[in-house]
View 1: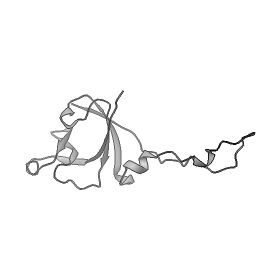
View 2: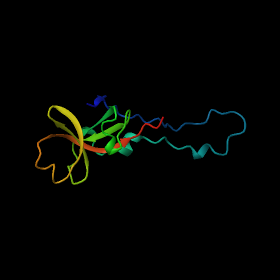
View 3: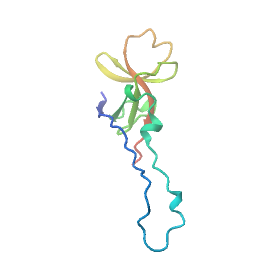
View 4: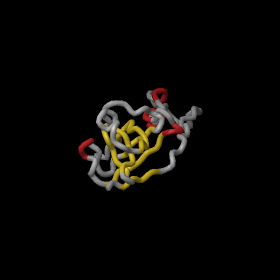
Length: 122
């Protein structure tokens, strides 16, 4: 059985605040190229109120290339369609399935659709 760990999603804070340079001496020619950092929450979350993250412990879902310490982004608002990965509850335990017409006849409780898998490569 996989162990799932979830945490509360926090709103991102804008870190970029334009201000006058406090640098003394010759200014860098690249100061105007400063860009705001990438906010993965804005890039990877479709429905903020219906999305949560879980960290996977174990390798029992390796057939879907989901391994130990990967993070699944689960969206409860997405529709379950053919060939999508879904987090379901079957026989009282969490499981990941790839939905097909054959599963439409089996009994499970849909917990959400997997929108992204963030891999741990270290």
